[in-house]
Length: 324
Image (cartoon, rainbow, N blue to C red):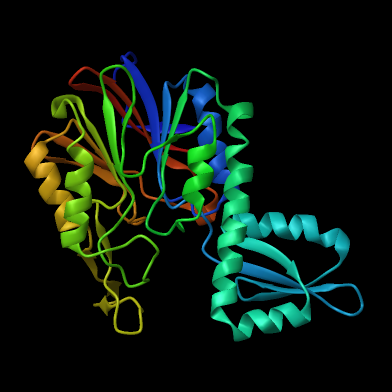
């Protein structure tokens, strides 16, 4: 693991914060392995756990399979399938073996595709969470809040796992002093994701959640979407066809974070704001006294991007970017 921007080496509570894994199993495993590597008190994940697309492996009459991954067509034997499925998962997609008949049905019925996608996401989250007891020491808490791209069906899986602390819309304990207020919902996006809403509704959700915080001075806000116009919320501007807009040969970047999130941070001034959502804008910025972080994401390259944080009372005693 590689760390950038080091700090003091001792603190009361040490945790790793990451987000936007999007089904990349290699990144998830690195995230879990960091618990032992850094001797952590907690792992905190702010959503978008699940993959973005199903990659069908369609069985042919001759027993081979047809598949397309990243615009490349493959003809696979049974022996090829394990390596190919690993490649699919590394690209943050979900492999699915099927027949020509079922593939035709799915192409003709978007509702069936969504139901299958949800079923596969739930199965994968179960498998991922069952790695936690094997890889994460008992003393290390694992706090997970789903993100805007995660289907609602995964929540029950997270809630029911004995080693996971479910964060969404809750205030959970990081340690005896510090609380984490979690919200994975976002303001509207071009993609009509499962957990997005108007700024007005998001503000109501955030206010409802943070009303349960006991001590704002040492609180942590784990809100998936970053605050608006904060430099950690800049994404490519898109045209009506969802293509990046260019000026002078360069993509135009604009702030796309949430005004509701910014308003709540400015109002309550917690110790920390943990954010993600915008993969292209890693960094950290102060809003008043609140240190806001976005580790960014390079899940498609198999890279874990995270922040290693140590806090002692009302002080941040260590803040490191981590890449692995």
